[in-house]
Image (cartoon, rainbow, N blue to C red; front, side):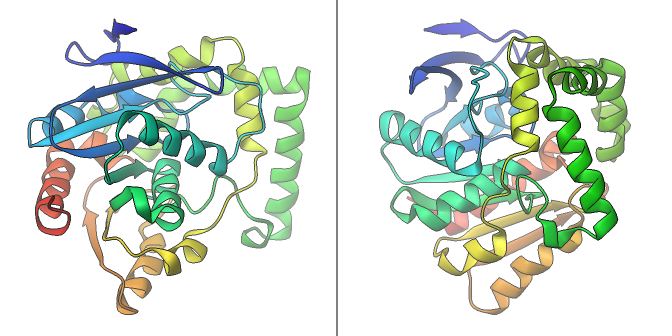
Length: 298
């Protein structure tokens, strides 16, 4: 089934695919070497609206999908994890692509892309990590005792049927979404009504609050430090230098891996925050295309 995705862009159409009895929304544009775009927490295909056309008209077949629990995909009542999404994407690749691909992700999506590159070399030509998260959630050893207590208390709040709804309704307000975006975007003009609506609309769907709670209390998954030793494909690491959520100091582990012989290119993006592909798409698109042409030619 194909439906126009007017809220994403007039040039993007979405399709639906059934995975384990759940509806998954995706889009595909262009012809050529396959690229698979993986969004971050709370986002969707629409977060790539400034990237899909540019990549698709540069000789690539671009796929993007809404992860289970997000965007136009079903809000399943399951135990979420990085492993679930890796399995989803691997099955999507098996059904729709069947050709070694480059996986491109932002934030949690970048960690998923790195996990695929580590565990599934047979389907991976390379990966682009944009402000990669270190985990789906914080690991206890990463927090001091006070923060561990705060995070544990917050997890109990969001998991409770009553307080969880109150917390979720507060966080998903458009005014709060806008304030959060102003924190993580360096360029305020990039925080448009279209972007706010794109993040807000899926939160109104049945099951969205339960997904929110399940993901916030989910295990973190393997860390980049655990994954990198088994990665053998080229990596492009792009980092918005002014990201307050995943500071650019997180790129040091990739610098270390490069020093140890891994094929990794690291590009800081000045005057950009957590989502440079949306803030300065012309810069990020050009960097990705240049890297692809050098590193992962068919």
